[in-house]
Image: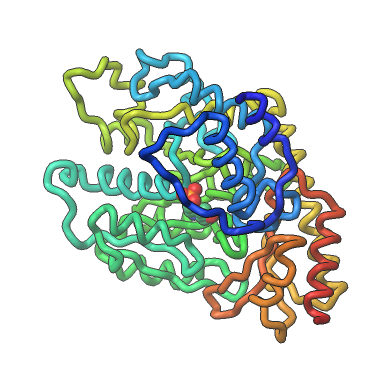
Length: 425
Ligand SMILES: *Cc1c(COP(=O)(O)O)cnc(C)c1O
């Protein structure tokens, strides 16, 4: 069966679903393993959009590197329990090492963190940490209405979700409009925070999901410092800029905490997110509790530092490719994606499209001001997968993201050609 699995992993895949795979699963009647494997392989192959396809210019889902897939399979097989340090010493130390290494890339001289399932968990962790650091009585008394959170109109919806989960309610989230270039309006933020009796946290986005724009981090950090509130930078995808030295994310080092998703920026399979904070000890103050049956090493036990209890070894799928490529290797891959995005912008402009976003990151939002964008995206979907997005300005745009390390210049040319013929029709 392993041979068949490896063959399936290496096989070419269709870009979009070929047919609707039926769900006639009889769970009362045992099946032969080989037949069961074929059944799931058909579903995986034919019943999904494939982010691993080089012409997937889609949402922030990369093609996992082969090494990361091997790492994830090894983790499933060895099944280390990362709740406690004593149970999985090497794995826990590896994750701590990786978190500090990424922290340094973001300019944190000292930090702690936790691997998360993704950005949603990391953003929620950020709010919980900010609440517990600012109001330690939350631990026993729970939250009361009052503390507020600021984010731009282009911020990810998980910020509002975190407020709901934390029991603050969505009304605690103050949405600051974005300017014409889709960055948070810093002056409006400063005025709103100055009027607010209890500003708890500002969430700046480094690489918005739709348009890849980077909020003005230094100016926002100054507002947060003046108000004495937490600054969380959601760099789920855009954190990749910190790994490309000539790009960088100036100002992110002033954040209290950061979200970064290797399963978006670093070609890791889902789910691999990170939460980092320069307040060493804050995670323990937020999450630690003790059960009599757990081996205790409170300073190093991940279960005492995160929302999860039993924990998968998420860090291995980050470590194995990173050992092979090194940070310079990742920077080179990301540089190629940046160059392909520049090429895409130039080709689109030559074809009469208008680029409507302004970002150093490899995502391009564009329109011609007249085509029905949904029909265009559907018309090209078998050639190249792109999405339609609605920006906070109300404008709609086609969105093509270079996220796959296998995408080449020929794929970019094919996308532009497909768009041309879709528009001509
Ligand atoms: C994708 C994304 C998230 C959510 O992260 P998941 O890994 O999908 O949970 C949060 N913030 C931003 C800016 C994102 O792009």
